[in-house]
Length: 397
Image (tube, rainbow, N blue to C red):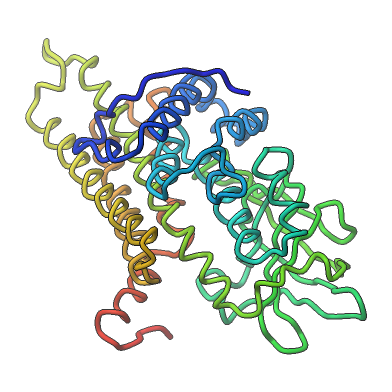
């Protein structure tokens, strides 16, 4: 159990103090998470990023802090709000966007899938061990030939054979897959062409996961290519709550916001690093923080972050109230990741030549923003979703 203690303070990147809306207990947990990340992750993160490695030893402490099981009452350590969960994603992203993505995959996609789709017996078998950090989960939807076109282009198949299912196909860009214990696989039933979901133990014959090398965004995330070569599973591995892609889309509606929050956190980390640098770096006999053009870049980055935070907060409130729809989440994800991308560019420019050296942190946040901008709905796809909602005309191909 983590013994980290800390007092909550408002961050310089939270200029309007949005986190003050959290409950006292939520603030306390967020402060302890912040202290834990500062002590256990920040000193290692640049080395981990360069080595394309994930700090697997920190999963259990994160579970002890309660930031893996917080998504539902059956695994949460205390009652918490969707707003708190958003700030957890941002807090992780401030230090390493890859840590936030790990949490999003684990607490969002995998545990969200189990909460929405699993039977009570399946929840006991997989949900609770993942929340406690005893099992690592992964989520396999994207394929080599279908990313944005996952709804229609899904090629992985599931064929019923008596009392078993046979899964065949490939998945790509699957986070955690190289070291996961179980993977939720989305496949198309060859009998009715509808989408189904299965929990696949990674020790099952026919399952292989190969790490994707040469990746220069979110390098700490262990993305993999998965091959399912005639994987045989019993009916008890099928999640009964999935019978169409609409069921999958309902989960993505919930997790799309996680990416927006992670992007805000990533930009906050870049801004705070750049702000520190401007106060320490001297040129022409004074700190560069005193120069007008440097202040202009700082203010533009902070404006992007503040506006993005405001959208995340309101969108999260709508989610909790049950009034959020697909197009709300799409606008939030697309617009926020674009603003975060803009903010980290200003931060990199502030740090000048040193801005491309990892010791100053900014270039890591700059690179990580690219993945956040692309996955869980590209900017173009989210734009089309919102465009359809506001005009009543679909521009999808």
